[in-house]
Image 1 (cartoon, rainbow, N blue to C red):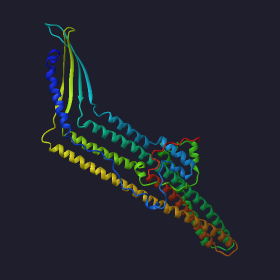
Image 2: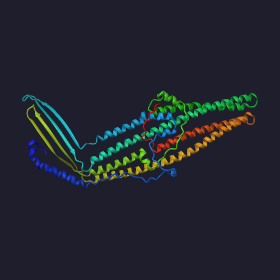
Image 3: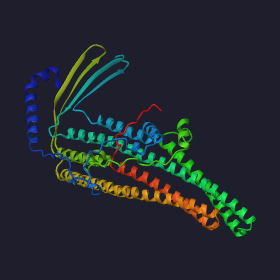
Image 4: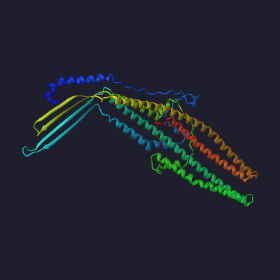
Length: 475
């Protein structure tokens, strides 16, 4: 409907009746439009984990679990990583992107102003100046919730991005703490090798003295020299392993290798292997819904899939919008003409509706897949925690026995050295005792690494620390 200002006023009663009829008909159809209500998925959790059934359930807090390793240097390193990690920075930018995409969903009302100036000339009339200003208005009614469902899907993407930030934070905690445990392990192995080298050099000197006294043979000397060369051959690789771990830690903290703060580099140069000082608080299985980012991401995907069902259903029904334009034309600064038109636009879905209904069925199937994927994610999370508990408890028990074995081998070495000096043991017995102590010390270092790694893995599998913030200290 298009008319001048005077004609529009004359035809207004008839246009109003048309508009009322279109709106009433469209809204009447909306009562027939089906919708799928979102129901938060649930899971039949057991009251506790299989490995902790005899312990009272506790609510798992989002505590700084890495502080249970009792290592201030690690605490500083984690604070630096949580502040400067590039992985976290990328994840945060994804949240910003998702929030910006929410704003791209078309609004209910849209204004579209435009202006035009045109100059024309001819020999008979001279130059003519024409100008026009136009303001367009479009207001979309949403009786079936199409725009609402688009907003819900966009909100779900924001929630997924936020959960991905938490997941990235857990990855940072996992990689940094494991890299630190690996650094201390490499340093421990290097220290043991250097100590063992000193011991073998002493044994070699003793063997040469015994050979001078005709109490040892040339074969004994060759064997001692071979043992010294063997341990020296290990040192370059072990020193390189320490450097590699330092480089890895620097990159995980978001800096170029070799550019960590000098005081932190000095603290990283020496230190003991981290050992869990406390048993982890495993909480109850339902904590996983709150703490595990992957479960929250899967739930939001299901939520978005349900929104897509409703969006596809809304497209099976007519869409209604009110559009209008106000224009003002002027010629040579003289005559002016003002026009406007305003009215409803009813857009019916394409016929037949088979493709639209198929789209709804496809969205429903996709939503069912996301629901099953959510359940699979929960089951996988429970499996990871249960296995991590088994591993942690087994390693903790083995660590005690390994420490006891190392202590006993050391006592045996001291006793062998005493009886050797008394002439009641051979040089071979002393060497064997030294080798046993070296092997036990390496096994103890291996077990300390596994103990720390199992502690780290269990806490990350529980989702603990997903919202951790940098801990600023006075150091």
